[in-house]
Image (tube, rainbow, N blue to C red; front, side):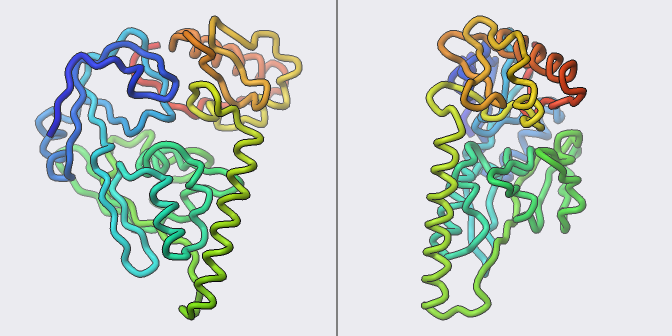
Length: 291
């Protein structure tokens, strides 16, 4: 297992902000992760690819466990069994190769499948909860929990019970749609559909999402509320942190924004949206450390 000391967290999250982490652990197996969690008395942060994360400028003293080396997967029938660190895009690619329908939106979800389950990530009206079948979690005192039904995950819009539960996702089993017949003709038809749908969603994403600057994707759980209020919002920037003109659900780091700039802007936009619309867009991204 690799241990990294005094790491600049700007290199570990998609906002490209944050201070120094005292130590980051990168376990390479579930057994290593379980042993590490026990040795740290379950007092640590967990990150994946850092794509839905805002990290404190003050740095992180508490140990960080990064799961991105837990990246094994296997296929059993019409199910994909993936460890927490497998990239969502990779799951989409595997599903495509098997002509499995329903995974297309994952091609545009940045980060790991563990993070996607944690935040019930979605796009184009789809979300990972619809693919979810079962999962294995690690809880305190090395307690392994087998989740056997999606209802036990408490999924709602961009939320799962993992956000309030002291548990780590080890692996998840996902299942999409597959032809009732396994003829080569039908599988070819499904593959054509998957390829076309993935391309269609990609075009929508390119058109509607600002992809040229560091960001954490949609920062609000209900971005449409911000879009509704956007024309009346007065504060749309703090330093180099700006609300995207293309998609007001995004906040961008135009060059040298700090996490404090971004957090201040998020709070301001959220307050103004509530004042204007009476609706709380709520925070979707996760905060690491004190802001």
